[in-house]
Length: 352
Ligand code: GDD
Ligand code: MG
Image (cartoon, rainbow, N blue to C red):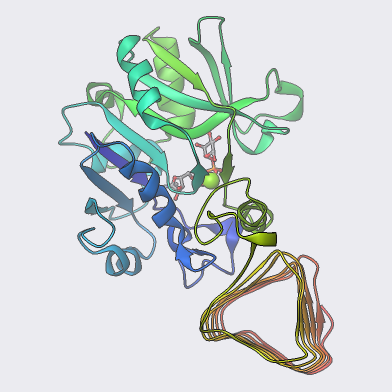
């Protein structure tokens, strides 16, 4: 059985972080996001190949995962000549599929038991099965109504507030029968959410829901990207290096340097080669990337700082996200909510 990951979007809501780093490989702590999805897929022995459907900056992703031998599963890449939308991408990448395929949006993190979803798909002899998950506000997602037997009655992408009839949304995880792809036109942009799913309902094909109440998040906005780090530090989602339940969920690389007189308040993460100088503070829910320096008197709290940044003396970085190689000058105060692209330089005393 094959898994197809839709990983070709531009990641616009995560800009500027995604200008130089496509969303599927933004780091979560020190691992590119796709690693977490591949870990989940590897739990299903039946899945023997992952097809990555790419469009935006595909080479960066291919270079990182190669043929998959380092992550323990065969990986194949299909690069669209132009973005074909979620259904067009499946048609383009999955044209030679002859058996049920697992499809994943390339930006969702979850602990779902995929084998159970596959079993439901088979027992219901479904043409398509989709995972639903409850959220507080469905407007940013695809709203899905079902009947009491779990048959899907309505799929409404990005509903207006007055159209909300349920909290259950499309979790971006599907099991599909490839012979249903015949309705997807070739080489034009087509949406699985707006066209393919509604078509299954219209034609009254067996289209069923698996409702999942466990951990699920779409990392595609700065708020959610920050949230996933907090969730892992708090133990709501189990992932290395926090899996072991280490005290206070603080992880400091043995190859980081924390000078005497520096203050570290957990939970937080300090990666290898980082330097936290005397008098500096790394506060709760901070992530300090590889080789990043936090100088005397600087405070980083609730912020995610990618590798090779420098936070100069007496600067304060609060609840912000910093791309790679940012240079934050002395006495700068930024956040909450700031998102800086790679190589941003902030002059001394900047406030933002
Ligand atoms: N290959 C390819 N080509 N991939 C694409 C394209 C494309 O043209 N467009 C989007 N993708 C990929 C994105 O990279 C992402 O992994 C996935 O498809 C979904 O696109 P998003 O842009 O993240 O969609 P969304 O988050 O607004 O909504 C989708 O996900 C929600 C769950 O997180 C929808 O499927 C909603 O119905 C769903 O609730
Ligand atoms: Mg998304």
